[in-house]
Amino acid sequence: MHDDALTAPVDETAAAALTKNGLRMAVVDPADDAQAEAWLHADARGFHDPAHSDALLGELRASQPLQRSVGVYDDGIAEPGIPVATVAAWPAALTVPGGQLDSWAISAVTVAPTHRRRGVARAMLESELRVAVAAGIPIAALTVTETTIYRRYGFGPATWSTDVEVDARRVGWDGGEAPGRVQLITRDGAIAVGSTLLEEARRATPGDVQVVGHRFGRIFGAPSEPEEQRKRRFARYDDADGVTRGLLVYRPTQEEGDFTNFSVDVLHLVATTDDAYRALWRFVLSLDLVGTVRAFLRPVDEPLRWLVADPRRIRTTEVREHLWLRVLDPVAVLSARTYAGPGRLALRVADPLGHAEGAFTVAADASRAATVTPGEQEGVPLLEVPVDVLGSLYLGGASAVSLLRAGRLRERTPGDAALADRLLRPPMAPVLTTWF
Image (cartoon, rainbow, N blue to C red; front, side, top):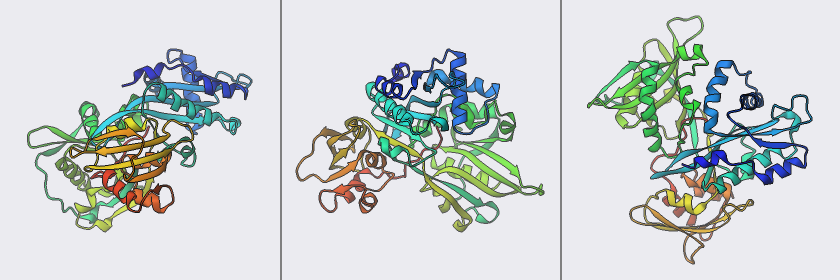
């Protein structure tokens, strides 16, 4: 893991560009309480969050040494110690088909409304990409609140997720019984199980990103939010040999005015085996007094509809892109994953920022591993792609044929995009199961 990136100094190119606009860029010292807390308050303000409580500040401060926080300051404003823009990033493992690689996870991108259209966001994001390249990190990743911003920096949507709503009383279970058992556990027990189980599941889920810092604790209800913490319930699944294979975090809520009718939000359902998946879904759909079950950030190819008697009682309430990827080193990135079978594919990548510019040939063998070399070969199927489209194609979450029909890429000869889909698409759709 590239932890040395956390100590990278301020990017001189970005700092110089901001200086011309009367602004100052600085890396926040996590040991400086005043500076670190001012950065956290600016981050909250940027997302219209309430002011941080002392308890939440304590949780966030504990995680700050695990990330590189950058602020942009205007020394001429009334409170110059509070940054007018923020960004944070840290190294985190990204699961790809057949393996994983280090990514530069970017978050907390905010610009104060008083300082828009002064090149601040561009300076910060291009700076983070250069920091990652200098550290040898081959890909950057983020989740977004505004989808229209990030393509201009080379990011493309790479995973999609759904929210589902289930009529638990009428859907009917048709998935049989799993061996083993489900048992209720405490929050402490869930944290003890989750510390290993979540990472095991992450490594088996293309598109998932390692959970770093306070984000792990928030899955179970943050100590800074005691009321929310009290609402959460936890269950685990142990297989026939007594090995824990699944974990469920859920929140029941009484429907107003009716103590016999509850809804349940599935906040996190992690399963490392199919039996665990079936057992935990059967458990939550069979809870007494529960009429509606909602689940969030679920895969677009969720198997649940094949486990119930009436799939019409499952409603997909939203489908959205979730993880965005920005390829920085195509050779390292394309070599890190496996492919559906033997084959060759060339990619001609256009990158306005220059990090991934060039042509690259992927040669996958019978073991599904690939050798990636710069350049292209005559007669090899070829796609011409902007770098943001390469990010969308990388995990197989987007179809090359669909992107071709949309005019987002070009193929050298008819059928090249279809061949790319055969090589790139994994057996299951990639998914990111958390926010960062």
